[in-house]
Length: 194
Image 1 (cartoon, rainbow, N blue to C red):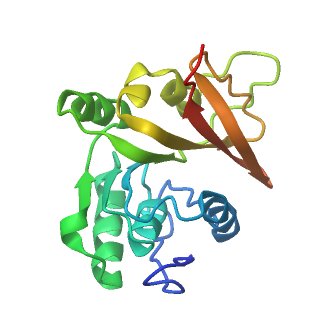
Image 2 (image 1 turned 135 degrees about the vertical axis):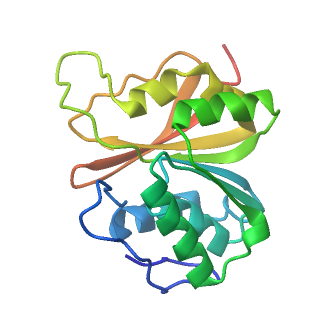
């Protein structure tokens, strides 16, 4: 795995073997960041289910004003810290929170934090053909806190498995869908009109 673009583009990320982490593949990240264009530059970014930190660190490389990474596993959090330090990315612009994503969202809402870009590529759920999804991706898009931490005009890039049929609730609109293999990213915005 590597950083795709920006100030440390081409640099490798450490991905320890044997941990229960599914890093977002380089090709999927490249398609996502090609779609996002210059959005990360100067943005406040929230990276949920950070894993190795690849998405959030990519945003820092591309000039994000600040990145908050939320990762439950202390082992994965150490990997994120190590990757950020090894890449020499500005530590003052990166906050790492070792906690559950929904708990993190609630605390960020209570603190009045807002983000221009929310990235989430949680663990894949079980196949849901013909039945409602119970995956983390569905829980995030259903959580009112996700909308509450999103700045006006902000976007959510939500990853999920192709086999997981995510239902987009009222109040959200899908701007784009990016699919590669079994990975899908949906670019979502809050509806501005009824």
